[in-house]
Amino acid sequence: MSVLPAYALDAYRTSLETRILRTGQENGRPYAVLDDTLFYPEGGGQPADRGFLGEVAVLDVQRREGQIRHYLAQPVEPGPTPLRLDWGRRFDHMQQHTGQHLLTALADARFGWPTTAFHLGESRCDVELAVPSLSAAELEALEEAIAAEIRAAHPIQARHVDAEAYAALPVRSRGLPEGHEGPIRLVEIQGLDLNTCGGTHLRSTAELEVVKLLGTEPLRGGTRLFFVAGRRARARMEAHERRNATLRTRLGAPDEELVPVLEVRLEQLRQAERQTRALEEALAQAYAQAWAAHPDPVQDHHLPDRSAAFLGVVARAFVPLAPQKRLFLTGGDPLAFLVATGPDSGVDLPNLGSAVAQLLEGKGGGKAPIYQGKAASLARREEAARAVRA
Ligand SMILES: [Zn+2]
Image (tube, rainbow, N blue to C red):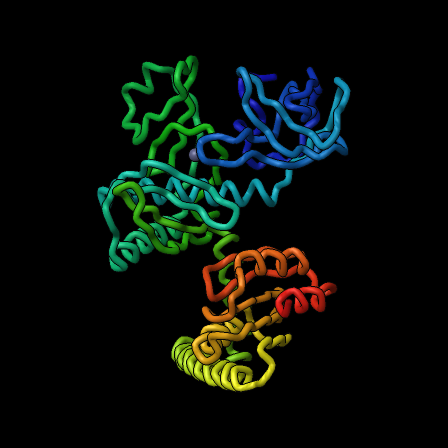
């Protein structure tokens, strides 16, 4: 291999003929070390590349002991091999990563907000800025500054310098790996920024297309700022448009009225829920009164469409009306059961309750006068009812 891997010499290269030098297994994962590689190993906030080594999928790429390991879908043999890069994924990473360089450079130089961390996520990216909070106006100003530099189409280049030249240069962030030796890789956005970086970058800020700031949240005394760049920003816009189109159809309102219409619907829903609760309460009272007035001292009922909570409401109304009676209820989805015995019924409720729970293959608990639980089967419900009656 030349001094530098192919991805560091030309980030736009998508295929390469090279050799498999060595193979092995790491925690059961087969890997290969190559003479040269197109695949960027995870690092500096940028995820690993994917692609193919011959016909075998490259699943992950990591630096280990000064070498680059390509983790593969299946083992391979040493020898010549073609490499093919998953270019869609890589170009996306180049857009996000270069977007971060530009965002970080402008946030620092123009606004005095230094970046302390960067994450390139599956759907969005973020930088952590050493500033307690950012207003909407500040975010807008930063986004406008970024857009202006995208339009200016600044060339972006990587170059290597020795330690002496490095020390004399106005480099923004001096983030070298511990124990670094040899030439230092610098990435320059011409006229804007000079920074150490081993990642893959676009050749011009114009290729960023757009950087869209998404919002902030406080984090460790600083501010986490979310953003997307390039095609991701367009894909996100597309997703928003589709979602809005569905909402327009379902709510029967144009974009600008979606939120007020939704607020009205939610208020209607809350009212309906309050009404349902009142009706359920009235229904529970009616059940309790009817069953308390019934001559049979053991009331046994199955209410398939009612919740466990409803069974409880009925029982709490029933017991004071019929302190000498017993109530056995089942119902609900998931299945629930309840045994209630008034203070004058002379029943050992915990014993009876656990016997019923066992027959219904469930579990339960509770203090007198109510024992309540979940049931798994009603196959032995008749036996359980006889136990309550006994
Ligand atoms: Zn970089």
